[in-house]
Amino acid sequence: MKQTLKIAIPKGYLLDSTTELLNKAGYDVSCFSADNRKLFLHSKADDIKYILTRPMDVPVYVESGACDLGFAGKDVLLEVESNVFELLDIKDGYCRIIIATKKDCIEKVKSHYEHFGSIKVATKYPNITRKYFEKKGMQVEIIKLYGSVELAPILGIADEILDITATGKTMTENNLVEMENVVESTTRLIANEVSYRVKNEMIENFINSLKKVIA
Image (cartoon, rainbow, N blue to C red; front, side, top):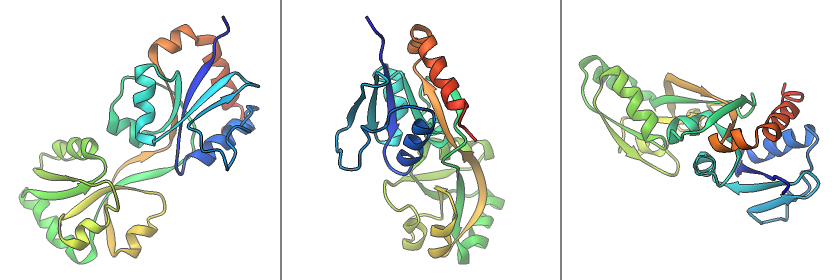
């Protein structure tokens, strides 16, 4: 029986760059048409099945074996902490996770750091936040948000935020200033551990195809 690769593709800002990479590597991406709202796509030309999902869910599907491979940001891998193989740095989707606060509150926040007082941090990344401040030996109250994290200091529900940024423009427009750079992130190709052993030749061929077109 012929083997098929199942690949998790993140929806959102990484979708276009991922499909562009696949196209450059010689894979048929016609199934990713703009008017196609399906979440389960099949490229019969390459015998690859693509699963479109939320970025945070990519490593979950790969770890469980629902997908053999997936494209995920390093920020997502650090947050979700799934047990997967990280095979390749795609060197795309560059962004940074940073600590930021209101411009007129930076001295106040720094005083918390100096006296090791407890601070409130709003974030979409509670695991990264917890580990980061644990290393500093600081007490923090983590406020998990799903939407615009930048609003938290403005509305007074947090002293600072830990969030992702590509250009810093949103931070500047909301009167926030960067305090620390936590980690840099790019897109990674990940694999299910069992799939990597069982479908090793197929996966290695896929990796080699991508390597040829990665800048």
